[in-house]
Amino acid sequence: MVTERSAQVVVASNRGPVAHAFAEDGGLTARRGGGGLVSGLSAIGPDTDAVWVCAALGDADREAVRRAGRRLDADDTGGQSVRMLDIPPEIFGAAYNGVANSVLWFTHHLLYQTPLEPSFDAEAAGRWAAYEAYNTAFADALAEEAAEGAAVLVQDYHLALTSALLRERRPDLRVGHFSHTPWAPPDYFRLLPDATAAAVLRGVLGADRAAFLTRRWADAFTACCAEVLGAEVSYGTGDGDGGDTETRITYAGRTTRIGVHGLGADGRFLRERSRRPDVAERMAELRAEIGPDRRTIVRVDRTELSKNIVRGLHAYRELLTERPEWRERVVHVALAYPSRQDLAVYRDYTAEVGRVAEKINADFGTPGWTPVVLHVRDDFARSLAAYRLADVALVNPIRDGMNLVAKEVPVVSDAGCALVLSREAGAHEELGADALTVNPYDVTATAHALHDALTMEPEERTERNVRLAAAATALPPAKWFLRQLDALRED
Ligand code: G6P
Image (cartoon, rainbow, N blue to C red; front, side, top):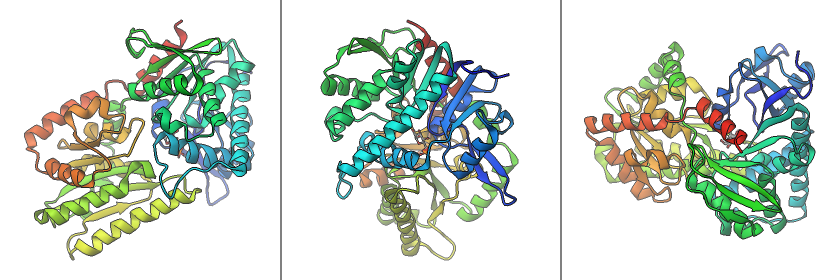
């Protein structure tokens, strides 16, 4: 039986491993949550003594919490022990939409620009108060769930204040914070009101160890702590992911270690999952939409501004304009799944993606050829089918913590796929040598890279793909998780 304070390992994230929906008969259905964070953490597996604390994200999740009590039924969560927090909707909405997915997401991804300039007024202060309350709710729940001396792994920008709040409640715990996003460089981070910027940094420094997906994001965080807080930094020789010494940040009498763990793709799972019949069915459907003897450029994203889908479509348009020999011979399969639709800026971007795709089809399409095949309904089997069919994968984010699509396509692709990859994706640190690198703002260079990718000799493409797949699976999720845990438990 589960008792209070029972867990030796506690994980905290906004989005948990399951999302509920109402069925027609009024019952509840549960399915796996989406996004890179959930993919990574799902490797925790049912056999570890871990509790996963997450937020109820809508009415169906709230209903599931009401029916289940403190922890959800393991049958519905893939065997994991999950505590979902029923945070009042107005607090949750202001924290998740009004702070995390607008202010903090836009800051770390360098997305603020006209007409999206930040402005911090009395209403913004109200949303910030909600963000504090939401982080406090997590800290309270974690303090309840963690056993004496347990390891607590706090995830991402939604919970930037939680580590410090938890330390106040439970100084006995080992607390780690992991950022799945980039971290803004100091000059950009200073767009935030001074008190907010300092609170975010102090919140993360409440952890014993703060870890990032790449060295670049870790260094940006370290620079922010030095410049904004005046913290003292002792630079290590490595990333703490293999015995090197770690960078240490000392502030207000405490020291926080800085680590880097580059989350990789789960090769075994992806290979097995992509061979199932539902994926074969989706492949047949996509093949029918693509048409015979055509090359395929694939992209798969949540639809939001950092993914740079619109510039990707403009680059494809430029390819068709400048290289008319590709007309009728190539199809761009764009799977662009709606994300965070409560916020107007995400909704507008989603609509723009649809408009730009339609315009390309109207301007270039012929009775037997649809240049852009756009799908917007989230469907994991279809994503895998597209990966298998891809000749070229386009991954061109403005900025991305890692980007797991760049790592998944080479693992799954049937014939070996050429990867056009933004130098601003975290994945570029590991995959850059065998990808075609692009500056995400440079539409013309992206169009050239698409052409180079389409004309790459099959032998070279296969060789590069083999190396890409090996690099992509170097640190699969289960190992990634255990490395963090081991590092956190070390002194
Ligand atoms: C990114 C974030 C995750 C988040 C995911 C999906 O990967 O780092 O924390 O879960 O996006 O976004 P959503 O808002 O749908 O949870």
